[in-house]
Image (cartoon, one colour):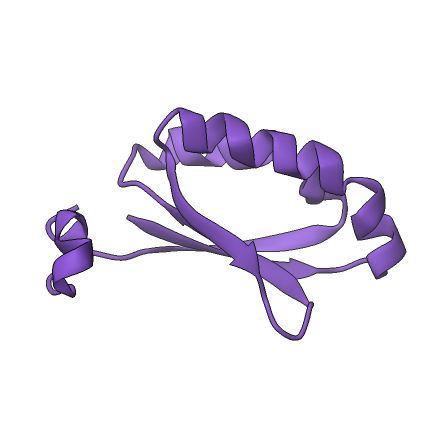
Length: 94
């Protein structure tokens, strides 16, 4: 799976201006089974997305569609989950 960390590079007013488009994009890829979890950082300096173990080029293409590309930098880390709590056992081996 992948951990995608977004860090805002623009003021929150600019982030808010593209938030609806970003949320629609998130919904699209949650519905497609690509995204597992997502949320805001606290304090609100960006966000985090957990994505399924898909082809990295496909993930790059998906991230390029996000409206937040105009207001944030993305750091993508591939994680090979080897242990998880019972509730998240499905992530092991992804």
